[in-house]
Amino acid sequence: MAAQKGSGKRREPTLKEEIAASGETPVDAAREAERADHEELRFLGREFLTWLVYHADAEGGGFAASGEVAAFAIGFGGRVMLRTATGMVTEVTLGGASPGASPDLRYAIAGGLSVKEADLLLVQDDREYRFALAAEHFDLKRVKLPALLTDEEDDPVDERLSLLAALDAALRLAYARFLALRTRPGWTRTVVPAIRAWLDAGT
Figure 1 (tube, one colour):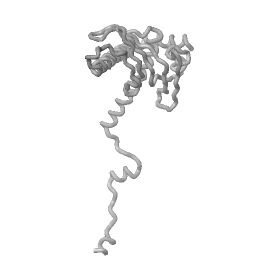
Figure 2 (figure 1 turned 45 degrees about the vertical axis):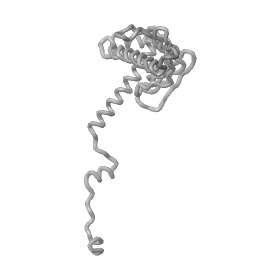
Figure 3 (figure 1 turned 90 degrees about the vertical axis):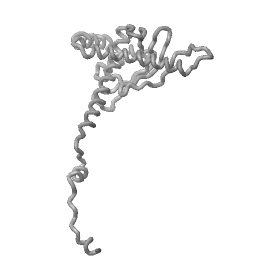
Figure 4 (figure 1 turned 120 degrees about the vertical axis):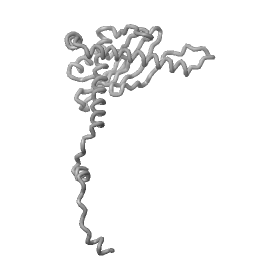
């Protein structure tokens, strides 16, 4: 038995093993499609926040009512984080009383940076929401909801969930308006020149 084990032929590696040993891996079509979708989502998220900077500063940040969503306005809070659009690690964070109206912010955008994350203020009727929105996954962070209006007999958890749902619906409407602009021919003919003029005016 020992002699047979020692004299056995060496097994040839399989193609899969050779590929793994070489450091190369076959392309998984489903995984590659998922990665491409993720990159597109990040790209659109950064474009949305960058457009929102312009809309808030140059157009007042207002959004008309639609369906069950009441009219609202979005402004910028105390911090805006920007990142190079090519995926490099270069990042710039601007803060202050009104970074959305800052010439430094316009200079950074004109130089090719896009908004990665921003502190936002959303005002709807007599309610004020403060939160941060990240472009990569549309994550909400540091959410500060309006003061609860319920009586002691009511469930505050239900009202908080209702307020979160209202905030989510408003942000969805804002994003839908952006997509409607972004996918129409008027984006290139009208919106982009207007954004460029806004950038030039502040740099």
